[in-house]
Image (cartoon, rainbow, N blue to C red; front, side):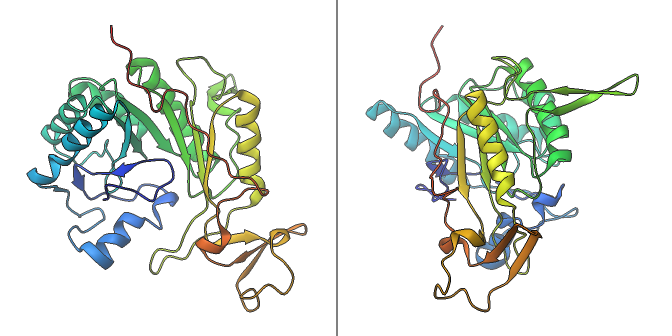
Length: 308
């Protein structure tokens, strides 16, 4: 939790409570759980783990950020990084308090990322409705999770009208085609939908991708560079902002120079006869995709909500 986050797509991180339970393969290398194990030691993760509400003094921090942002006439992005805002095991009163705080900080854009998008509508309504300065997003690590989570996210967008919607495809563990999200079957035929072009209300407004990093005993799984390229190109074709956060621990072989120091003796992974990646570390792997930095953001991400 930091006032000046190193996460490329937010300004600050702040969490109303700490704790979660793993629900998908993307959770296997949870950095928040690793942070608790190695540095904070405050909360136990897992099925029988706890959720710990952060302190009253800590809850005043976003109010101070809001005052500073208002005085400067700007909007600041905040991401709850150590919890899932739509976690089933969280007290309803906590979420009501959290949403009240969001409403009290109109110069902050809250980026509510969840792996439980099916809970968004019910939990938001129970907490008094989704604040207008809240964006909703979901994590999709592969096509099966995208088929489930994007559908729920867009249903929530239709009902709640968030500031914008977004998807975090990090860690990207398999290819995703956002132009062919499966919505079900009729008479044995699949119903597919282009989630990047669906409509102004029901579409993905922003896509973030990233490779996985090591977290303690969990070692990063490699991402095929074509998985990133497929999402990048689909976003470009649809006019959807795209941000590539990081390559993770692995880099494509063609991006490495022969004989480069530190390459010999590293781990290698062959995806196919034409594609191999080398584990060189997050910093060395960087965040360039085909030599380009992708830092796309929604047009309204740093704009105040329109007043009625």
